[in-house]
Length: 357
Image 1 (cartoon, helix red, strand yellow):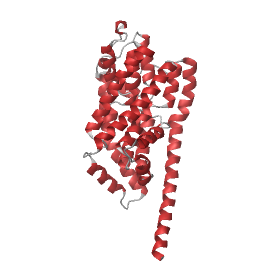
Image 2: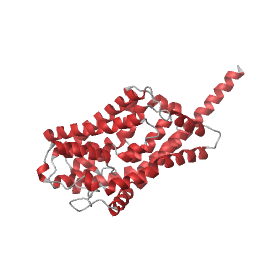
Image 3: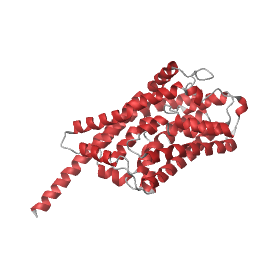
Image 4: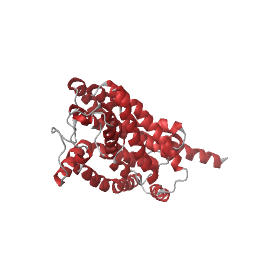
């Protein structure tokens, strides 16, 4: 009898501790998102509505074409890119590390740990308030995966942040037109749910990084204080992500003129251009909503609606850097599938855009 009472007391104490940690986690996340995302985007929506623009293309700036490949081009792009995203990168690292130490793993496993469509949809819905670009969402997706989220759950969160970002869709409606925004929503839902669900099929005999994730989890479940656990999780995320992130962003920035050459009005809705830009958009890295001024600038130079629709999907969804950022948490074959499927959906979106836009 006394043993039962003691167990009940321990469970109540544990639940109270979990609730307090969850409250602290929510407080930090909401405060961070309000400062980095919600408040700035609220103001930006009025700018988009009144000016029908949210700035210059990050690829070419005010020029008609991107600068030729060079070290200077790499540095200029890195500067522009990280000026736009540094706050969100810090927030992503913060949330990705805190979710491993403040959020009970049993709760994450219950909500996001299943391979069924319910976990995928729930993860997609929880991604909506984040409004992060694919690279900033990557550390959070890694943190969720390390905390017992399923492959489809973590990927739905990873893909949903940039693709179904409600702020970006509103900006898009005011700048590019609501037909573009509607296409983005429809194809975005297909991308997030479809790719995430199909990716789970590859993970049934998943072998990669299981030992790594387990060893890191054991480290965090040690007798260290909460602060030490968080610092260990944060340091591991930084080591796993930042060096490769910096290098690949610089390389893509240096060669962006090759990925996005000067627009020829004769291109129109060429199938070859749709395929080429779908692949380029899948590889290239942009800040949140960066696809909008890029598409606006390219269309003003004569790019057709089809290639623009391809970029509408592929530019925000993933990038080479973001796929590298999550490589420690997902098998290579899954990441290869995600990248390939994104490019294919971009091509399909381009063909649809030729007809409806």
